[in-house]
Length: 380
Image (cartoon, rainbow, N blue to C red; front, side):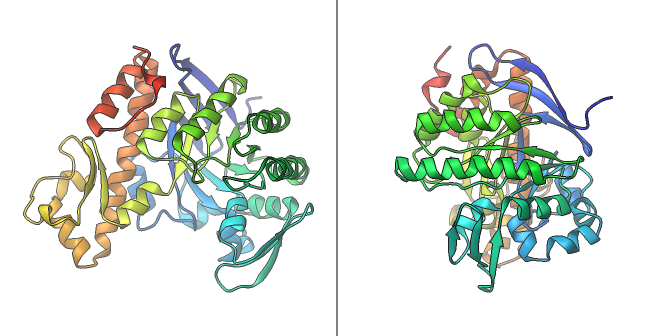
């Protein structure tokens, strides 16, 4: 009998280890590498599901912490699960809320049993355990769910990072025992801060539970990008070939390409929609800050080479007008464009891997956008 979740590895780039594959889920297949838009509270801000499909979004994220607080995971379950609740029939991934508990909560107290925290919304008190998080994620019903983990802060000393890793490993075992929904794939998360020994130890333990995929957490948390790439290079030779590798919370164009070059298949980040709401667009020639006065009479599209609904129908002058008058349509159009830009980048990256020209493609793209890339791309 065919598994509900399985990964087909189709091609590995010989120069870098970049991968192209297909992840099969109950709500459809995901071709990789893939950028996943973030819909924290069961919506990608300002964008309809139909619009997300028009920009080729294959899978979106929601967050267990936020949906537990509002409207409550029982409400989502009563609605028929996240897919029905938000009107999205493609795959969904839910983060466990671990990062939010440690970064957003007004106060938190970490214990081996779990984490006591106060809501960032109203200060109400809550307690997350691995078992509670699995209850929440099982009720939400996403295709892919993440374990409850402790993400130690960048700059943590070795002793604390080791303690957080050990706690994450114990919590993983408890998550696996408590996970009851066979229509969901549980991904373990590799932690270990920026210590080689701890990263490899965390990976070794996580692999016992990495049946369908594995997440890499605790990166892109304020460290120099070179440190993140170093950690990925430490892990890359030890990651299994037969499952997808998910780098959590990363989504700038340069980091997408650098991650792919280090064996990463899945990425997510709020970056694309956050900068859109602030009036910035990603284009093939670099960032365009649409608010700038130079675009007041610029009646050209954001990106001449882009086929998204924004670029095909609207000009920089119009978008600047929307931004400066506070019209919410500006955020919608720029968000659609930025998501399209990143999903197209991953589509083109995948094509380049399959055609044995990934490094050449990445170098050309980086030159167009004026991105500073690492020596990983100096192999030609």
